[in-house]
Image (tube, rainbow over the protein chains, first blue to last red):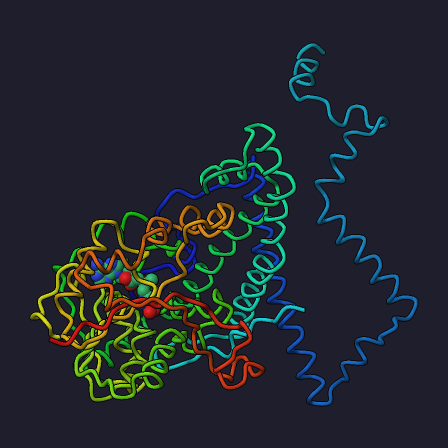
Amino acid sequence: MTDSGIDPVLAAAAKAKGKRPWFFKDPDVERVLNITMALAMELAVTRQRLDVLERLLDQRGVLARQDIEQFTPEADAEQERQQWNRDYIARVLRILIQSAEGESAEAAGVDQAMEAVMDELTRM
Amino acid sequence: MSQLPPSWQHVGRHELFPEAGHDDTARFDFLANLNGLLAGQLAPKVRTAYEQEVKPAFEKREGRVPATRHEVRKAMATNTAYQNWSALRRSSMEMRQQTGRRLVLGQLDALIDKAERRNAEPGLVLDPNIEQPRYAAAVDIHCMPGGYHGELTDHDVSAGANYDSGIFATTGGMLGRYNDGGGQAIARWLARDYPDFKPKRILDIGCTIGHNIVPLAQHFPDAEVIAVDTAAPVLRYGHARARAMGVENIVFRQANGESLDYPNAHFDLITTSMFWHETSAKALPRIMNEIHRLLAPGGLTVHLEQPQYHEGMDPFEQFMRDWDAYNNNEPFWSVMHSYDLGEMMRAAGFSDAEYFETGIRAWVDAAIFPEAGSGEEDYGRSAQWTAFGAWKEAT
Ligand SMILES: C[S@@+](CC[C@H](N)C(=O)[O-])C[C@H]1O[C@@H](n2cnc3c(N)ncnc32)[C@H](O)[C@@H]1O
């Protein structure tokens, strides 16, 4: 909050006066695009910060940037790093993994409608 | 390889400029590069989609090609390449506003303090009786929440500070470090072609934070300069900025260009920059009449604007240029850019003999585009505008 009582976080996110045009058939898709672009921007900010860190560490002789490029993990570290990647991808793509599950044949029951289950339970 | 935009770290700073950290620079750099991709790679795909899919489909259906930009717009609305490009463009605009506002609003108290200290020096004349014209307030122009005039608190300067901080990124640095390439270009043009022209009184209408009038005030240090705008927050910031930059010969005054209280023939030079497209069909001739009335015989009036739509311009080209009108809250843009500029000035009383129209490039300092060299030849790196105006006949 500023002395003047403005919340900079929300005030910065204010909408401009005037009807917003939506370009996609489904505005929901466009909302997701906007969130994705904001994340892309913040990822760029993080990458740039990391880049500054690497350069400063290099300049100050803590490590050489080449050390990062040529870093070859030992077996244990390799396992951990690959596990991290797998985990990460599953987090990001959860929604796709879940809908693929729903579609597979063995998964009968995964996509039962709640109403059907409700009916069933009132009958048993 | 297309030219990379200069990093925002090169933006021209002054005492009033918001203090920014690493992440603010990184955000603006992301946006400048995103805009580069949209203009350089995705906009050409929109043209291809038009030429190869949309136009042939229209032709098949109607037995002719689209005749107007409105027909093109309707036909393009459902095209995927157009939708992707537009949705990203709008998103980029909104992110730019949020980035600048977050930067500014987080330090608003400090900015107001700095401005107030500078504004205690003479040269800022506000008038709370000035109303915002409907055309400035109906929507928030180019999606700036609150427009130029909105105030979140007393003595607010946030609209000015936000405008100043983001424009370097949205234009990819093409207006120079201080975003004053238009004013610089006019000053250089006058110095080269009219070295004897020494205006005593200069008027700039719709000055915003004074980006383009400051270089003229510096070029004519003995001139008395009046810069008017209807919006107080940009004037407060603009006056403090000019003072901080050591410029003391500009009075920033809250006034409406449609009706000014100066006597006839009071000014030797009257300018506007990127102004007319933010007015209206009724206001424009009124302001032009005022200019004719206020200009002294032998004086010059000169205006910088985005290039006009010319007779016979491809409707697709017009449609692309219209994008901001519909999608970036620039409601008078298309109408203004279809006007006959010479006719506009004749209607206000300037004769054909007095009128001139030419192309002019923003002057960009070599500091941000080193390869551009002297600034004489910039290899297409700076913004290209129409400069039009008149030398009023000496009586
Ligand atoms: C696009 S900005 C001009 C940019 C500025 N000339 C520069 O060189 O950076 C348009 C400005 O015109 C102002 N404006 C609009 N109508 C006006 C009027 N009738 N009289 C004075 N200023 C006006 C707006 O408040 C806004 O600040």
